[in-house]
Length: 415
Ligand SMILES: *Cc1c(COP(=O)(O)O)cnc(C)c1O
Image (cartoon, rainbow, N blue to C red; front, side, top):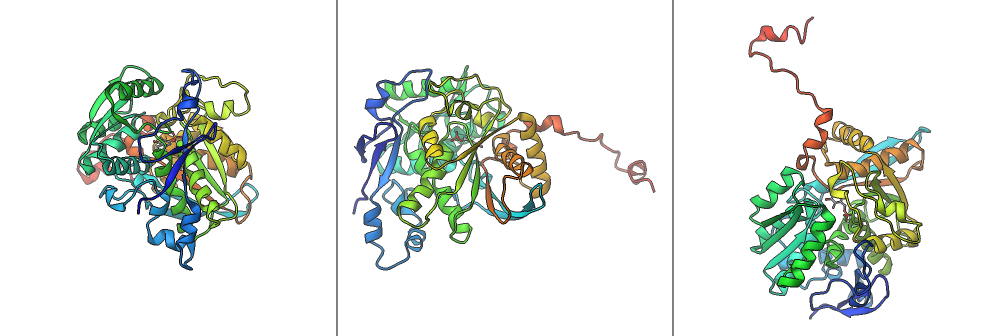
């Protein structure tokens, strides 16, 4: 039985069938301007009623777990997914206290434990699976580095070809991954936003299938899986707050979409409060939230994965934040690096700056007593610190080597 789902335009509400390649809503896209976030990102809608009708008296979430969430994924078979283990990442619990000494729970969702060491594998896996089911063997993406290294790795595991447009200045570890996984790399002498537009033009010109974030609606569906896992790992309960780092706004929309699916199925009754955390040097989503016209300020932040001038999923993320009363916070590069150091030292999780941004948002909330006693808070750690060693070098000093004799330690450990 072929699964039924369709797409709905986030902006005009027009509906589109699934089964063929879909990107932006053509009606909205016709009016898109290069200096504005694109309208027309498509949301994937399932037949929630037919899921509920299929339960046979079973608990709905139990049924979803047993079917590995396939009823809420835009693919026909779990067999199409990569053999690599994507998602199902650990959620570590600890306790903390706020400024007034009240204790609460904080959980670290470590998505650096994905095959290519970032959250992006969740999206790549679904896009790659869909491509397999539709006999597409080459996938293109533009990326600040992680989406590209992710697509390259996932395609390698699936016997597919990939082509990655990245800013030539992306961190060397991410460029190295792309090449090691055998992708065709196209370094672009420009910003991420320019690489994005170039990859879309190339897809149109040469007929490639494009994985670009938000532009391809399946990226949101892959990213939403983290919400199902958090709910399951918290003992089938939603948390009070989730701190999410935001660049293009697809991860945050994915988190919302996952919980929205659970709301639609009446598995949860209330949306958790989602906190959008951006770098002060690239906070075009937060800064434009209440403006009538979007103005892109040029990005300048150490957190390269969230350094975005025009967030590609701006309209959907803003709509979610407004509908569900989300919260926002911008943190400085200094707070990001401080957070990266303190997270590494207190938990053993070494995060790249974009991921440490979410933790910096959490630290700021904690210090301003905005976390209630007994509350359950989740911080989404989206990428590994090994992907960008350069960014923390200013905080590291390696001592001079000692000569390999016991006497040379006297000066270090004198009694
Ligand atoms: C892509 C990315 C983000 C931001 O995700 P968006 O969907 O662009 O908002 C955050 N952290 C890391 C490590 C990323 O790679």
